Image (cartoon, rainbow, N blue to C red; front, side, top):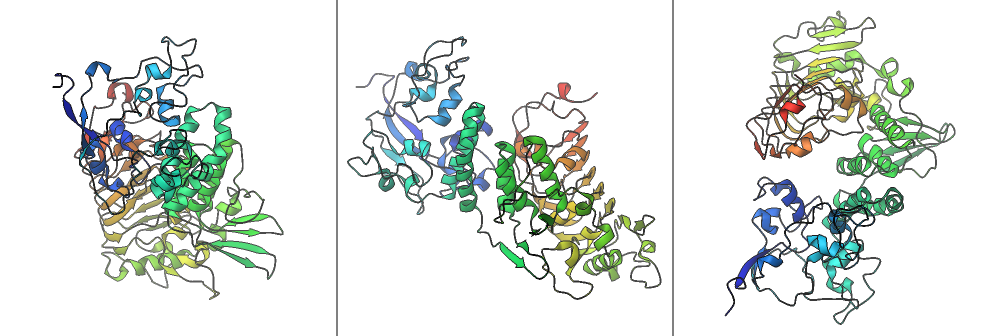
Length: 591
C-alpha cells in the first residue's frame, strides 16, 4: 500500500495550449483575477472561456497521479535570485520551456544575494517534463473545434509540442518539418504547427511583447522587426479583412487617395503595440487604422488628411516625442514620410468648409426638431442662426456653444446626419469635411450640452475629435448605448456620460496626447459598463480630478496605489463588482 503522503490524489490540469481571445493563458488569470474568474466569459477563446479551461477559474480536467511528498514541491521562486545576465525567474517562463531545458543551467550573478542556477531557484525550471506517469483523465472540456496534440510525441531531440510553441511562430514555419521523430514531424503532430488560429498568433505576439520588455536594449532592438512581423499576422488573423481601396486621380496632378482605411479592431491592436513595444512601425500602422483616410499629391509630395487631421497630429507628435522619428504611410507604396498634419492649414478647416447654418439644420431635422420643447428661431429664414434658441456664436458667427438640455431631442446622436455637397458634385464619403453636415462640422464649438433628452444609439466618435476647442460635453440622461469614449475631443476638460446604457468603455490611450493631458472631470456612472477596472484605470489622464464610475458592472481589482494621479480628489466606483484591497488613499489623494 502507498504511504500516507504517497496516496493517489486528483490533480487538476489546465487545458493544454488554451488561450483567450487576446492570447493570454491561465497564468494571466491567476495573476490578475480572484479565484473563479468571475466576469471573464467575454474573453473566451475558440475553445471556451477560462472558467472551462483553467483550474484556478473552476475549469480544466482532473487526473489521478501518485501523490508526491509535499517537501519536494516547489511553491515559490527563491527571493532575490537573478542570473549572470540580470534575468530573474520571470524571464525563464517567457523564454524557456517547462523545466528550462535550454537555459536552466545559467548561474547566479556575482552580485546576487543567492547562489545557484535557475534550475535550483525557479519553480518553473523544476517542472519534471520527463515523468513517465500517465494521468487518467476523468473529465475534460469538449469542443468540436478543439485540436489535440498527439500524446507523447517527441522530435529527434526529445522536444515536444510545447518547445515549438515557445520557439517557433504559429504554423511552425522555421522548424515544423524538421527533426521528425518516430511519429512524424511537429507539423503533423502539434496543433500550433498545423492550422494556427487567431489565439496562436496573439499568444506569440504577446510573448514577443514580454520579451522586448525583459531583454537588454540591444537584444530587444534586434528582435523588434520579427516581433512586428508576427504581430502583423496576429492583426490580420484576428480582425476583419481590410476593404481598403486606392483611388488614383490624374486629371490635374497625380494623386492617390485611400478609401476605407479605418479599422477599429486593428486600431486597438496596433495602438496598444505602439504604446507597449515602442516601435515606430507599429505606430505607423496604428495611425492609419485609427485616423483613417488621406490623399497623397505626388508632384508636391504632400499629404492631406481627409478624416481626422487632429488624430494624425496626435500620432505625429507622439512619434516625434517618444522616438524622435516621423510617421510613414503603410497603405501606399511610397517612401515619403507623412507631412506635418499639425499645421494650421490642416487643423483649421473653419475658413474653408464650414457651413454652420446647414449643419444646425441637419441637427434639427435628425433630432425631431419640430417636436422640441423650445425651437424658437430655428429654420426661420429671417433670423441668423446665432439667434436660434440654445445657440451662441463668436464675432465671426461661428457656433461656440450649444445648450439644448432637457429639450425633447429624439433620435440618433447627430455627429453627421446626411451626405451632401452644396454644389452637387460627387465626393467620396470618406472626405468628411466636404460631404456631411452635423455637430462634427462646427469646428469652433466649445460647449455641447444635450443632457436629459431622448437620444439613442451609438456615438460616432472619430469625427468629433476634430473639434479642437470642445472643452465641455454633457450627454447624460439619454438612451445612448455601445462604446463610451471619454477622449472624444483633444481639449476636453469636462465629460459627463452618466445615466445612459453604455456597455463598454474604451481605454485611455497615450497617443491622444492632448486629451490625455486636458481631462479633469469624467462621469460614467449609472451605465452598464462591463470592463476590468485595471483596463479602465491603466492610463487614466494624469490630471484627472474627479472620476465617477458607480453603478456599473466593472470588475477586478483597483490599483495598489493612485500616486500617479496627484490631482485626484474624488474617485467613486461604488456598486460594481470590484474585489481585492483598496488603494493607499492616504498617500494618493491631495489634502
